[in-house]
Image 1 (spheres, one colour):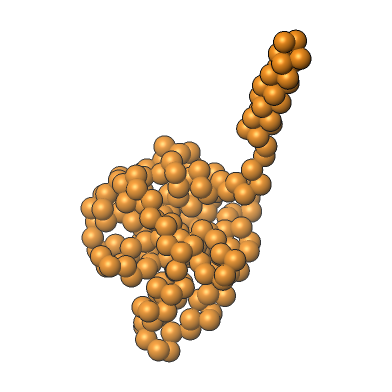
Image 2 (spheres, rainbow, N blue to C red):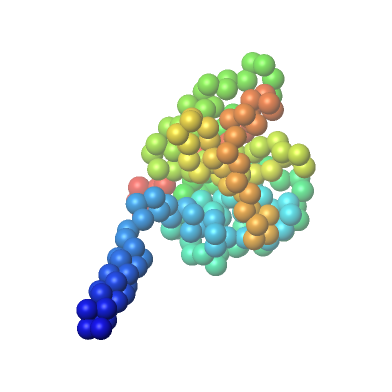
Length: 187
């Protein structure tokens, strides 16, 4: 009986220790951008552009997670574009509109994808307009997948949309515009 009790205690102890160790293991795949996206909302249907800019500002820790000033100012504006934020400095971050070109067979697709790759390699995200079933929506390019595709996130209310075929969508659209950003060095 003592032996059976000893074995039972040993098994329970090992299980508890294993469980505790598993819960304290560091997740090396953690990306702060996941936290930003999970805690962000797009407040108005047409506020995709300011919503994406807010996500970047939150990712750069220029504003806190409760920051929605850009969307509140924009609200249901339907005639906005990346141009509204081109060369604007917000909280030490300057946004730049790029690839404002005709969407046709002469669009410099390789240059666009190289620009996005360079931004991602430097630890930045890229705001991109993508043509989806419902029209043009604004996404933030999050990362490059192992197969070379680009993964992009967008918010609609609290719902997160994840696209894992961003390059394919851009190619079908014959190009698109993006927004990049630079962080002031005096911050």
